[in-house]
Length: 260
Image (cartoon, rainbow, N blue to C red; front, side):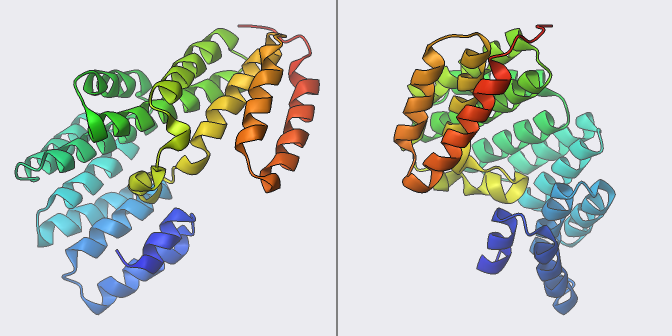
């Protein structure tokens, strides 16, 4: 993938990314890599049929792990989980003994499954993998676990399901603390941003903002401590917006809410 296309994916300029890959395919219709890349971008646009068509075209030219991976993502988007798992398994088999690549495909499969509203299955799989992983593989599992729990916590908060929000955000905070997420070099996980649009640079802040909201809702003084930790960790440009955010949320979430 060219630097321009990669940047377009990371900045969510997906139409530009599609145009780049389309031009490359027009110039060389046998370029199977571009079909796979365009499939991934089309999947980010939720154009599942077009994404699957590109993935299948890619496979008709040459079978590779990225082709089966892009097919698995498209099938997950279409709700065809069993077929998607088969595609991901084939992608894993084609890594020819590369354990790092197999681990990467495993996480991509888990994320695609999570995005297909199979959150419990996805989290269970990544948690099990984390239990038997070490070093870099463990850290990548921790990043994915944190993102999953943060998203579920945000969903629960928006639905005012406080007990679930507490459960998910507590899990995220525990992982963030254990792996020292704040000091990690998250650029090594940029592929998650390219493939799924994840904004990992703000993950630590997202988790702690969710935790702050929960503490505010519970009327606990620790909410201020959490907020101060956020402010301390931010640069000057971010602090003003954080102050506005906290003041706004303090007014909203300090009011009584109905817990479901």
